[in-house]
Amino acid sequence: MPTYTAPTRDTRFIVNEMLDLASYSNLPGFEMATPDITDAVINEGGRFCSEILFPLNQSGDQQGCTRHEDGTVTTPEGFKQAFDQFREAGWGTLAQPEEFGGQGMPHVLGFAFEEFISSANQAFGMYPGLTNGAISALIAKGSQEQKEKYLPKMVSNEWTGTMNLTEPHCGTDLGLIRTKAEPQADGSYAITGTKIFISAGEHDMADNIIHLVLAKTPGAPDSTKGISLFVVPKFLVNDDGSLGERNGVVCGSIEHKMGIHGNATCLLNYDEAKGWLVGEENKGLAAMFIMMNAARLGVGIQGLSQAEVAYQNGVAYALDRRQGRALTGPAEPDAKADPIFVHPDVRRMLMDAKAFTEGMRALTLWGALLVDLTHKAATEEDRAEADAMIGLLTPVIKGYGTDKGYEIATNMQQVYGGHGYIEEWGMSQYVRDARIAQIYEGTNGIQAMDLCGRKLAQSGGAAIQAFFKMAGEDIATAREIEGLADMAEQLEKAVGQQQAATMWFMQNAMQNPNDLGAGAHHYMHIMGIVTLGLMWLRMAKVATNRLGDAGDDKPFYEQKLATARYYMDRYLPDAGALRRKIESGSASMMALGEEAFATAA
Image (cartoon, rainbow, N blue to C red):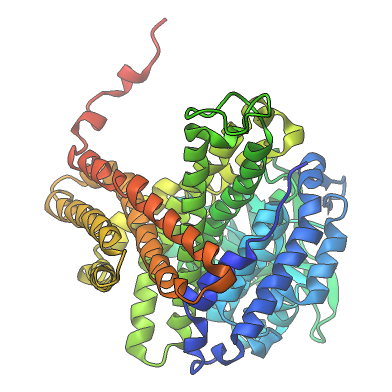
């Protein structure tokens, strides 16, 4: 009953007009990303996800994955055939290095496709998504032999990948892991331990699964400084590239989860499984963070994706469902009732969703461009600036993007009223699937602390100062464009609220670290609000400049400007309230002792 159409028109607007991808054609990889090529990739990628993957979303949720007695796992009906089509079409190779069989296209196009695939079928998209993270870690830290052995077939998606961090007794505090890696005479290690919550940990869609596993070698420090990273294939790989015997890693169970039922989230038991060190001993956490950062951006896209598909269905229902009359008089006098679309409270939820999804799409794609520039910008200075900026934005994209994505999904369920609570309408799945994005790859509380406890102070605050400088320059430019001065002023006030909150942290957090912890979530949301405001100001500039010669596209640009005004009016004022929450400090939050939280009989 739900529907999904990939938002290709909006994506092309951001890629070709706001980001002006063609202007980077002097950089490696970008020379292929001409407007006609990017349009073809976006349009065909949207078609594939809408027509091939989306029809499996609801059935995959209902059927889930099945674990068999031998520890193997079967994915929902149709998933394997769809993955074969995904692999044969080369979608997984889009932004991967040509050296290992990829197409070498900009990450901007890869991120655009990630949104489509996740909206169409988030559980399915996690199989190639985790593979991309494993590829990133091996490219950065793997030996040449490891790269040559694993990457070509991972890039082609003949093999998939995972990341193994969490254990039953520890999640974020990885220094507590107990998985052991015993060195062997042949240079390998025997890996023994249990890992939980391993997305795509076992399945029937690829010939091999390449696990990247955190473990501790004998005598390693009993902390995060003693963690090493190992590559542990499901099937051992022979010297000629063929598959050998089954390794000592088995799926012990599949987690019974709230959502993403079509993805096999496994408990994996390692029993002297053969593995090989990736990078340096005791330096595994740094290597794993390469995967984590890539995954966190992908999870931010999941927040956007579930908001987008829920929004599309919310709009369709609001236009169809009739209830009551418009407050200003009957909108359709000949009908017994008006569509609920006419009611301001329904319109509030729909406009909140439209403003968030289009603004968040711009932010994720700008973030993808920064990832590209980190590696391919013309100068070392430009590469360093891009790296610092995406480092600052990553916890915002993940944390704020998934908090709001879940909120939008629940609001779209609300548009449906009672039908939104009934499984057959599909809205429950979007809420359930969106919920995990706030939790995995570092909970959003961890994202907030990463932003405020690490990123703000890094390099003497250089990244946040660069962000404020960039926002100020955009605001100054917008002031000179007819019709945008008011928006520029509204954004300037919100930036001022963020600057004040930043200064308050600087003045108070050193004396009382709890003040930082108490305000971190609110600060992450302020920065999310301001950053999306910056995206909307940039989109409004493009729309204003294009209106004069827009032709048949004029309604599109008019809608952009109207939505930008809504965002500035309805989202930006929240920055002030959040700043005041931050400045209230931590005293009242931490005042009560443990006994006060117990329920009296």
